[in-house]
Structures are given as structure tokens and as C-alpha cells.
Length: 329
Image 1 (cartoon, rainbow, N blue to C red):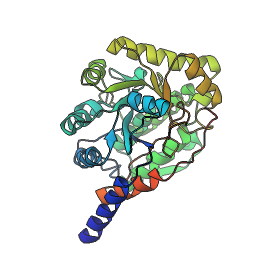
Image 2 (image 1 turned 135 degrees about the vertical axis):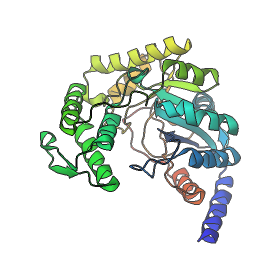
Image 3 (image 1 turned 180 degrees about the vertical axis):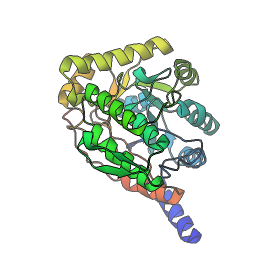
């Protein structure tokens, strides 16, 4: 098996190096766990992330997103161009990912939801930590239109988390807050961690280290659930707070959840232009080429626990250039 994996890895590496048509791959990460998470063993940990980053450093021209955008605008994008991005603003981005990026000589862009800095917690992490800490054998989720969810073991807890995330994601901010409050009461969990997200000083640390800071709203809402005024407030206030923290312009944006026409639409693309942003990234799959719109740049999530699997998937991703847009140019 090891021989097969090694052969697949070499083949994928060789194909990647023969890709000469300028195209931009943008990787998307959220957390980099110090150690494997029992509830989400497929999520990347520090040792896996370092192996991937060393592969990336050997195989690609890693650019800041600002430099990549300039390359797309000017037609100067180099072959095998790649950008590394992180969404949300988790503390492990500064504690775990930053030292690895520095050891590998790489730059990355961090899209931070400003409302969770300095002790805040995202709604999805509240769900995860409630289920993780709950000592009950099951939870009654009738208040969300669901049945009873077993919490008998790690697999059952993971399934319960996924059910909850699906049920809550597209609620309004107020409805989300109410759902989390009811879930917490039903679980009997007394306290939730307050150190999952970065502190303001850690955002400054990333900026001082040469990393890019981008906006990701204040509260990470699904933009299509907001009124136009609410959407503008979330986007502009989030950027303003980050600019105060790093004392520098913030010109890049990541759409929360990021699916075109479902999580954001053309009105939000136009809003970003009006607010003076330079470019934005989505979660639509694909690669960007010279001439593509700069306000819906596609990204790729590097799933896979081996370099061979990851390189093969990245190769397939490199050939995937068509993706659904909200309509930007």
C-alpha cells in the first residue's frame, strides 16, 4: 500500500509541475488543531498541516492574495500560483498555523470575523462544544424540528453536531442565538470555552509577521438572510474594526459560508465594490484565470490525510475551471 501511495504521489507531483497555463488555486482552511480532534478526526492537525505546507512550498508559487489579484489584473500570474487562506479567526491560526507557515517561508491571508475576537465564540463552535461537554446519553431536539439524538459515542456525537449545524445555519442571527440558548439549557452544560478565537493582539501578530488580514463580517451571518442595510453594516463594521486593530487598510473579503446565489448574491458583490474592496473569495470550487472576475474568486478545501490523496485532489481541482457565480465580472 505504501508503494502505491508513493507512486500516486510522484505521478501527481509530476503532473502538477507540467501545468504551465497560469491559473490560481486558493486553499481554504479554518482550524489547524494542535492534535487530532476525536469528534472530527478528518480535520487537519499540526503535523499534517506542516507536511502539506512543505509540499506546497516545493510545488507552487505561493503568493499573497493581493499579489495574486494583481497578477490576475495585469496578466502576470506565474504558473502554479497558489494562495493560502484561513477563515473565521481561530486562535490556533496564530498559535499553531503561523509558526508552521514561518518555518516553511509562506505567506497566508486570514479572514477574520471581528465580533468573535477577545473571548467570543462562533455559533457553530457553541454547538460543537455543547455536544462535546454534554454528559447526557441523548438530546431532545424537538425545538428544532428534529427528534432525539444519541450521544452514546464519538460517532453519534459527531452525527448530532452535523444535524444541529444543518438545522441552525440558515436561521437569522436572532434565531441562531435563541437556538443556541435552548440547546445549552437542554444539555445542562454549565460553561463553554472562551479561548477558541483570536485576541486582537494575535491579529496584530499575524499582520506584523507579514500575513494578510481580510474582512469576514462582524458576526458571520449568511448575507442573504439580511436586509441590505444589515449586510452593509456587517461588512463595513467588520472591516473598520480590523483596520483599527492592525492600523492598515483591509481591502480583501471572504463571504461567510461563501456559496454563490445561496449565501450571497450579486447585490453583495456590488456592495463590496461600492465599499472599496479590491477582491473577494467565495467557496465555489475551481481555479481563477486571467480575465476572471475578482469578487468571486473560487477556493479549494484540501481534504485528505496523505500527500498522495491531497496532491491528486489538488490536481483534479486544477483542471476544474467552471464554477457557478452570483454574476460578477
